[in-house]
Image (tube, rainbow, N blue to C red; front, side, top):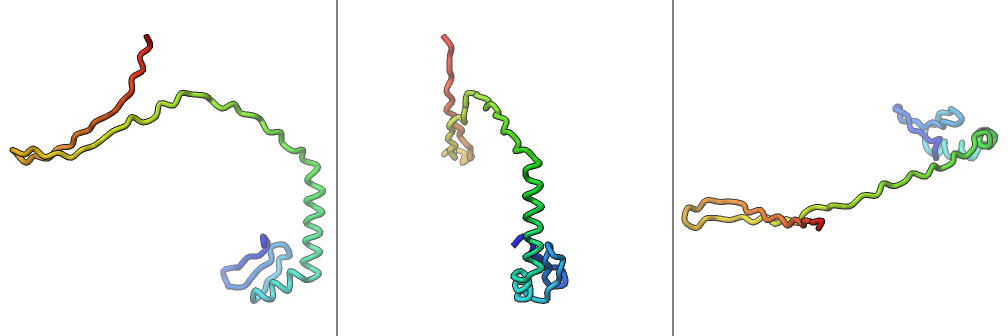
Length: 102
Protein backbone atom coordinates (compact mmCIF):
# COMPACT_ATOMS: atom_id res chain seq x y z
CA UNK A 1 0.00 0.00 0.00
CA UNK A 2 1.73 3.24 -1.12
CA UNK A 3 -0.22 5.37 1.37
CA UNK A 4 0.62 3.30 4.47
CA UNK A 5 3.30 4.79 6.72
CA UNK A 6 4.42 4.11 10.27
CA UNK A 7 5.57 7.27 12.01
CA UNK A 8 8.22 7.76 14.70
CA UNK A 9 5.62 7.52 17.47
CA UNK A 10 4.59 4.02 16.44
CA UNK A 11 1.19 4.97 15.07
CA UNK A 12 0.13 4.53 11.47
CA UNK A 13 -0.68 7.22 8.92
CA UNK A 14 -2.60 7.26 5.68
CA UNK A 15 -0.68 9.66 3.44
CA UNK A 16 -3.63 9.94 1.07
CA UNK A 17 -6.19 11.04 3.67
CA UNK A 18 -3.75 12.42 6.27
CA UNK A 19 -5.34 10.35 9.05
CA UNK A 20 -3.67 8.80 12.12
CA UNK A 21 -4.39 5.25 13.33
CA UNK A 22 -3.29 3.54 16.55
CA UNK A 23 -2.88 0.07 15.04
CA UNK A 24 -2.84 -1.73 11.71
CA UNK A 25 -6.39 -2.99 12.17
CA UNK A 26 -7.66 0.55 12.44
CA UNK A 27 -5.76 1.50 9.29
CA UNK A 28 -7.13 -1.51 7.40
CA UNK A 29 -10.66 -0.59 8.45
CA UNK A 30 -9.98 2.96 7.24
CA UNK A 31 -8.88 1.73 3.80
CA UNK A 32 -12.29 0.06 3.37
CA UNK A 33 -14.12 3.18 4.51
CA UNK A 34 -15.88 5.91 2.56
CA UNK A 35 -13.32 8.68 3.13
CA UNK A 36 -10.39 6.63 1.83
CA UNK A 37 -12.36 5.27 -1.13
CA UNK A 38 -13.50 8.74 -2.22
CA UNK A 39 -9.93 10.04 -1.93
CA UNK A 40 -8.72 7.11 -4.06
CA UNK A 41 -11.35 7.90 -6.70
CA UNK A 42 -10.41 11.59 -6.61
CA UNK A 43 -6.72 10.75 -7.02
CA UNK A 44 -7.43 8.36 -9.93
CA UNK A 45 -9.56 10.99 -11.69
CA UNK A 46 -6.85 13.61 -11.22
CA UNK A 47 -4.15 11.31 -12.63
CA UNK A 48 -6.37 10.33 -15.58
CA UNK A 49 -6.97 14.00 -16.34
CA UNK A 50 -3.25 14.85 -16.21
CA UNK A 51 -2.08 11.80 -18.16
CA UNK A 52 -3.36 12.80 -21.66
CA UNK A 53 -1.99 16.33 -21.24
CA UNK A 54 1.54 14.95 -21.33
CA UNK A 55 2.38 13.25 -24.63
CA UNK A 56 4.25 10.00 -24.33
CA UNK A 57 7.95 10.71 -24.80
CA UNK A 58 9.32 9.19 -27.96
CA UNK A 59 12.18 6.83 -27.39
CA UNK A 60 15.32 8.09 -29.01
CA UNK A 61 17.29 5.23 -30.47
CA UNK A 62 20.88 5.50 -29.38
CA UNK A 63 23.45 3.86 -31.60
CA UNK A 64 25.56 1.36 -29.77
CA UNK A 65 29.23 2.02 -30.32
CA UNK A 66 30.88 -0.96 -31.90
CA UNK A 67 34.40 -1.71 -30.83
CA UNK A 68 36.75 -4.65 -30.90
CA UNK A 69 36.97 -6.52 -27.63
CA UNK A 70 40.54 -6.97 -26.66
CA UNK A 71 39.92 -9.00 -23.54
CA UNK A 72 42.28 -9.97 -20.78
CA UNK A 73 45.47 -11.82 -21.49
CA UNK A 74 45.63 -15.24 -19.90
CA UNK A 75 48.09 -15.53 -17.07
CA UNK A 76 49.50 -18.05 -14.64
CA UNK A 77 51.23 -17.32 -11.34
CA UNK A 78 53.48 -19.97 -9.79
CA UNK A 79 55.20 -19.90 -6.39
CA UNK A 80 58.79 -21.06 -6.57
CA UNK A 81 61.54 -21.82 -4.10
CA UNK A 82 65.24 -22.03 -4.93
CA UNK A 83 66.45 -25.39 -3.56
CA UNK A 84 69.96 -24.07 -2.78
CA UNK A 85 69.21 -20.76 -1.06
CA UNK A 86 65.60 -21.37 0.02
CA UNK A 87 64.62 -17.99 -1.44
CA UNK A 88 60.97 -17.72 -2.48
CA UNK A 89 59.82 -16.14 -5.74
CA UNK A 90 56.79 -15.78 -7.98
CA UNK A 91 56.83 -16.73 -11.66
CA UNK A 92 54.36 -14.78 -13.82
CA UNK A 93 53.60 -16.34 -17.21
CA UNK A 94 51.48 -14.10 -19.43
CA UNK A 95 49.83 -15.44 -22.59
CA UNK A 96 49.39 -12.56 -25.01
CA UNK A 97 48.18 -12.86 -28.59
CA UNK A 98 49.83 -10.53 -31.04
CA UNK A 99 48.02 -9.68 -34.25
CA UNK A 100 50.45 -8.74 -36.97
CA UNK A 101 49.15 -6.97 -40.07
CA UNK A 102 51.14 -8.35 -43.00
